Length: 151
Image (cartoon, rainbow, N blue to C red):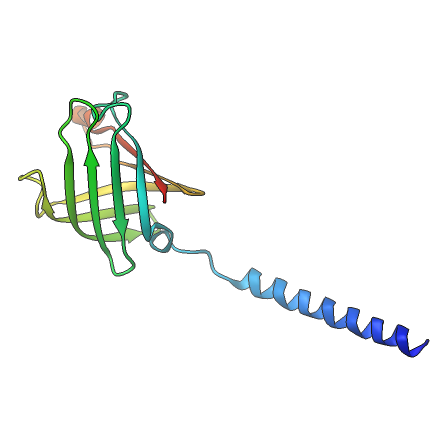
């Protein structure tokens, strides 16, 4: 085998070894937690309640979630519902795929000091949050679905 061929073979062997190491490293990378995936800025896409759109066809809003567990939400209504804003801290339960907003302040006087739990699902840059159903006949009345897009 010529010196040139040995050099090419050695380079190919080194490339294959590096590719195998990179593959093992990526395979060992743990999946991001839900909290890690939620951190950032989100733009409101839609809000539905019991199949209707009380905030109108084109509501506007934004949600910020930081890595330290703080959030703020602003929703401007394009329909009959009043615009709303709230802020506070949040916790995430990866096992249940839920986020709980601990409301510190809100434009709605009765919301401050309460916890709001939502089931979350992520698909690419889209976040869907839904209010868990309440037990009994009131459960059907709590059907709230909010869709956000990462900005």
